[in-house]
Image (cartoon, rainbow, N blue to C red):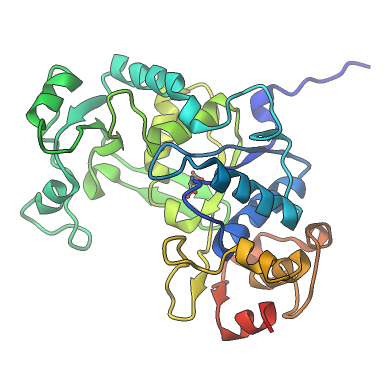
Length: 334
Ligand code: GLU
């Protein structure tokens, strides 16, 4: 019998992509749990990539702590940081050659240009109010500089670096999110050209995340709903860098909030997994709460990831608002 080989890019491959800016909190845990469930429930593989190029994300103790916390919950990965695999290194800080090469591909296609405008400059642009009080970038740096260095000289002494900005085409970008449904965005009218990196070699989140997902053959992206807004940007980048490759599946999750409706943040010290483990809370208790938030358990159940797996459905998440309220806190730390 002939064996059918599935091309590598068509195998289901998800990813964990933590930015190790601090210890993981329950919101992060929820995202990683769902990313894991989306892959494991469909027999796919998952990789671990450390996104340590922006902010203060290079402390090996934080990186190892994040990985340890996920493993303690029972969330494992098949490839990537700490495991190895065909796309080493799995830390973005070691992958700058790929970002430079990706930037060069965009430059060849004349899709990006250096821009000296700050976020505030962009906010002040435009006379007529558009969606909300936001004005699309008016393209004033398009064709203005012959090189990045020329733009950089203008900013000398300001402490800022020019951004690489991507030329947005006219028309709508349409894509389907597995949870949020069909999305239609006219970037030219709402946002205008967008920044992909503020670094001479293109080292920045937007470019790096797409370059890596393409390079590592990722086919499924499950992440926090706060990143839905930049997905159209990333789709444009994907199409420019790998026109032959189908887009990955996207799934943006509801963000976990506290009882004031504010999203949990690492900076404000939202309850961390590490703190919970140190207080003697069992992983099954934490997972039970996450599963309740997802709609796969009654409140108060304690479960392992393997027990959650057969109960997992994505659609129960769509009308959920996971909240770390008094009741949840009492359950975790009675
Ligand atoms: N590293 C990002 C974060 O921790 C996630 C990026 C992504 O999933 O595209 O928020």
